[in-house]
Image 1: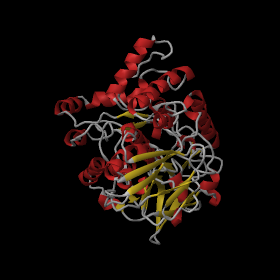
Image 2: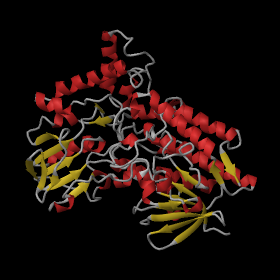
Image 3: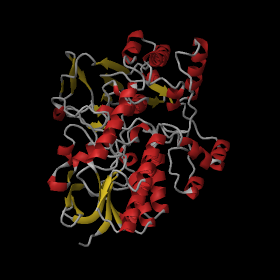
Image 4: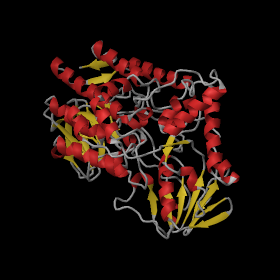
Length: 529
């Protein structure tokens, strides 16, 4: 049967754009379907105040083109959302990607036709597109989680979600604002909103760890040095678990003398960023080492926040690194402002939203605007919003009813010719997303080329290989402290979602090695037909 395209790619973020580019290079036809009006994916939608990447800009960037690396000029150590979006648009223009992207269109269903070995993809425009392969590039954090709080529709003022912010922006000047949530987007946006708002009331269920960004404009001399040695930096990054080029101190925290330990923590703190967790090699492996690092950060909160009661509420009680470590600019200092109130709802959830605000702990709070900084249905949310059906008409949501299972985080038993870029079971959110995306895209592009060379048009994983991979993902998760708390890594923020540690925590180098072994052994673990 003839197809409209060799592949349909879902999403025009960094994954979808690079996938399109690579398939074109190999002579495949492809169409990208994108819900937004422009490219950028998560950076197109996440426009909340203070939105910024937590990986340094010179590393949070494509590496497939040396020319692109040299010509693009990042302006800050940690790029803002507008700058990253400009970068995404530059890439789309430079590689002439837009002509194969269909914007303002959502995929509603994708069904595998077993008789013809093709996918039939339906859109909200009423179209059906036929393709040999479907490649999802929807992003891991792209399905906003709206909390199930009674009365949410009753609030008379405007309600905003940090994951779907108005593109024209929001001016909170002179407004009273209520914020629900203190995760990453809240930690970035609260300091900005507090500068504008007449009064800001923050409702916190769980205190989170955050480290200072120490963001600053990039020194031209530093940029020149990076550009002169980009290949070496990229090569080093691929040897690091998170795919980020920073030095990991291989010593144990508990085995290091206290004075030296403190010095090393202070050094990392002064530098800022996610590298704090690389202060010692066992912070996510040893309870005592983790407690030492956690106590260090807790002491910083009490140094910064003037009111002891507020400082105590802001102090996390769980282990550090179990939930996503945040990177901030002036977050704790914000709670010293007279126009900011912190409400602890850890022991009692919000009772209900009212017409004028909300009711919590028996008290009514009134405000003009409500901000939901309540995160995402991570890793599986966007995939399961689409009615994806494989062999026998089985729906992916039913296949994953007890938690997502995949082979390499890329493919799923019973769903031939379906690839999931940075899907559950891949390193994705525990790494620098750009190198992880590129590695996945290269694997998929090479795979399609190999199938073409073999005269084969169907590939799917076998059950034994998938089960073995799921076992590896779970085994690695059980070794670390990261799977021990209620985080979005295990779906704990979504009522009814199965509690499964979704990302592969074995590190990017081990993952790359596993993929290379699969290819070397002629796509071991896959059935080709």
